[in-house]
Image 1 (cartoon, rainbow, N blue to C red):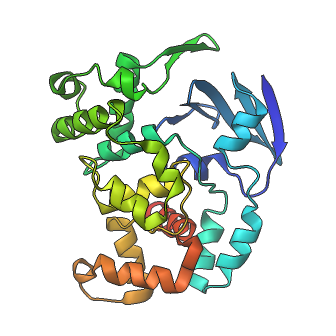
Image 2 (cartoon, rainbow, N blue to C red):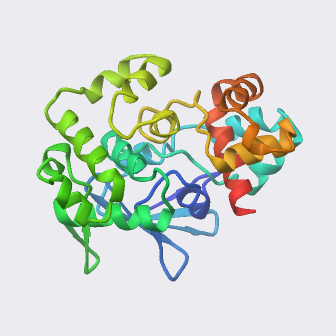
Amino acid sequence: MTIEIKCENFEPKDVFECGQCFRWNREDDGSYTGVFHKNVLNVKKQDEKIVFTGNCNLQEINDYFDLNRDYKSIIDKLEVVDDNLKNSISYGKGIRILNQDLWETIISFIISANNNIPRIKGIIERISKAYGEKIEFDGREYYAFPSPKELSKASVEDLRNLGLGFRDERVFETTRKIASGEFDLNMLYNISTNEAREKLLELAGVGPKVADCILLFSDLKRFDVFPIDVWVRRVMNELYIHNPDENKVSKKEIKKLADEKFGALQGIAQQYLFYWKREA
């Protein structure tokens, strides 16, 4: 299946390399191939069109890439905040926040703690190969991310052998809690952002930053969060706070500033600022 869509504000590099996802890899021709749900998809930009080639349908593509959301109107609202944000948007204007599977996003961002992207991607790939369903596409083998039930077959030692390091017990405990039904993922869709954050913090390995990443990058789609890591602290201090020692800038101070400046779209603003600071 190949689908071509004319879509403004969609640049594959910006979407897949802005830090929100870990299952997409760049091909030699500049396209990206990835796995989501039980789908394998290749995405490339050709002239003004985005070309999707894979084993999924248009509805699944629309949902995952949030193609029905008007990013032009979002950018129009954010660009007038100030020149700092306007400049960062011009660098990463092709970013779109994906609707990633909630369960996979939880485990992925637990793994991301104190980790780098190549290593995170390697761990997630090994977990998927060991416990996920095999998918054959275009003469190659891919693996879906395992369900809670499938991953619950892994012991702490099994996870350690896949290279999780200190995260092995956290992933084991959170998987057990979700697979057993002790923690109900579905209820997160029906409560406020603050309530959802508090519930996520009950899971092993989920601190405030990881909780905010889950809220923003999963299909919970909460744009009113502002995940703060070293890059975000750095860019917010450099552009707005101007403390000579960025390490003394508190997350509370940054969040208050994000609430005031970016409001309900602060999660998207964070991605433009983060991506610009890290890449440019």
